[in-house]
Length: 375
Image (cartoon, rainbow, N blue to C red; front, side, top):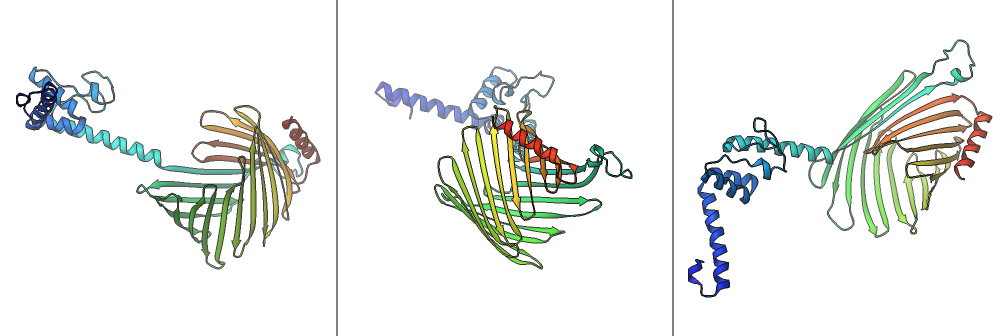
């Protein structure tokens, strides 16, 4: 490949370039420090180190090869710092790689939490018992948290728990789960979990995309004392703006569930129908986007356990957080709900009971709010 062995100029130029690269590679391999820099920063950094060494200068690799950070010479001078010797560079490089790995792991770890604190302010607004304090009292609390951590590129570990208490009586449980995702066009996955505590439950589930517009899942659960529960669900795109979901459960709390959702323009509509051994229920929800940051929400629920109506407003309060305020009036009383959510699955919910019975004035106010929000 020596340039002098070629007659044609283009062949001579190509051979000269090849000869130059071989010569540079030999110079890097022949120098121990250059090999260290090559392994950490690449060939350009190794050649620059040799050039600085030949000129009697101190090589500083951070200015061009550590994301352009500039620091004073008496400080660390970037993430990898000034080049001194292979041991020092390796130590700083290992620290940088460890920090990078921890940052990547934290970015892929999904933390979720829900915190619910219930208050009773009925006696504060309309005193019904002189022996009861007029200050709002905390009547219940429920805290749940979980974390999903990637173990491998296709396996995920989930660890969570919850604690619930109401007027001094409560309990809790812990949950451990595992999920494996298959690399196929159907997006198949299989998962299993175990819940131990106030309620013991073992579940196994699998999901798969059947077609371009349909997904299906199957789950089996075993609870000591209640036996086995089987459930099948399917999600289907019914149109450009409409989606449907059907669920069928066989077991002690078996039943059917049908959910329809429609998004069009400023409106998001959803209807849910449940028919089961424990009762029948139906809910209707309408959400209207009033602006880029504000929305109005209306909801009505009917069933064997009661009926109520909800109206309120919500919106973004920052780039990653949102808040909502709504009022509920039903056969079981009147309450206000304050909800604060943050991206990533964190929610704080504060339900405040305003009346233990149906308040006609509150119901009429909700109807008025519902009418104004649809304008």
